[in-house]
Length: 483
Image 1: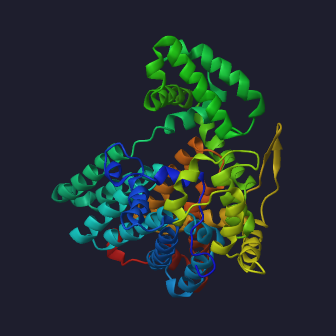
Image 2: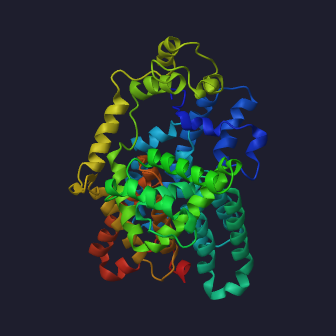
Image 3: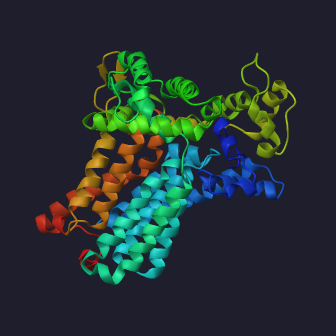
């Protein structure tokens, strides 16, 4: 913050530059970021210093939430709470996204908080904790487009916690059901169907059942992409633009030009076609999701803290390449920085004064060493057809194994930890089946891999110290909490 009081930004940041009166509309997607980023403008202050301060402050909440989860998940939690919270606090990828003017880091905090509050409710199911759980899950769903995938956790958790006395607690189940329905209604996306179709178009059958008129187009797109996608859909975003344009052309030919201009109509048709393709190839979807997850490792987990992003990237966001006119984001200069640059040369001269990169760049050096330690030990890469599939990092494998072991150590089935691990797995399956190959989609899972490592070590210590009985009785909660 001392060297770079202004947050980083990219072209996607402009999506959150929304007038306050538009933020509260039911059609607004991810309103949390839009509300948060609209506040500085109400006080005539630049956005980027505000975003950096708030998101780094929220990062402290991430550390606290990680500590609470350590207490809830681990038997010998006092052994692991300092290493776990320290790793979360200094994780350079998490730090980088805390300094980026996007709500991604806030989403990580909210997912951790949802898990911690859910564990607290399972331990002590009071009305106050139920209210907190409902509020945090609603905010989580409104922070990122995939946030709605966390909503079923609350409903299932409350139902399973009171399954032996469900009639007496139907009101609480109804509250979580209402939260689920309201949040789903207010977190609609106009891209989900398009992204899912992009991920599954190479599996399209010759003839579609529910949209038969689209069958020739589906075959055309399948034959275009299938030869180059033996393992996963590559070049996801450029491919999606081709598919959207072809769907738009189809709507023009079969309906009218006005309907083709509707993003929701385009997305609705894409979703209908994609769901049929997915259902008719359901056994292939786990492989696609897994290979796409691995393909995100082809991209660094985050850019560096150096001048290549802090200076060069920011100049290109405003002014494009050297031979291009100012970009559409140039109109947000004053809202972002509190000032405007008339020319590229002025921006190149002034941005280094606003983003003072360390000399030497210790943050980027630490980032490189941390990433090398986290991803350096991995399984060998594979080549499938013409595509490279990166090997799974051992840290991820051990972390995932630790989370599964923590779930299995619960004394009863349908316990809090089992429900959370199941929810995370289903959400990850949906996300990586649908989304592009950007590494930022792994961000929310980074703290969980380290918690999983602690769970693995905790289980090993319990097994060595007290034998199988202690290992099986691994709940950090009281024994009565999972009856």
